[in-house]
Image (cartoon, rainbow, N blue to C red; front, side, top):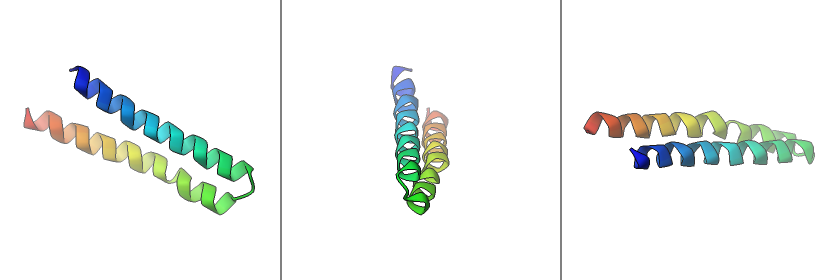
Length: 59
């Protein structure tokens, strides 16, 4: 159970770092790059759900 919580936490941290990077790019004047990196957030979270769901089905 701890391993699954760690996996969830890592995906949430990765998405949050991506969000912060996107916001920093946006406010530094690189708006297109900020939007591109901002698209990573739901992608990371969706990938995390897919991976974690697949592991729970195996057990």
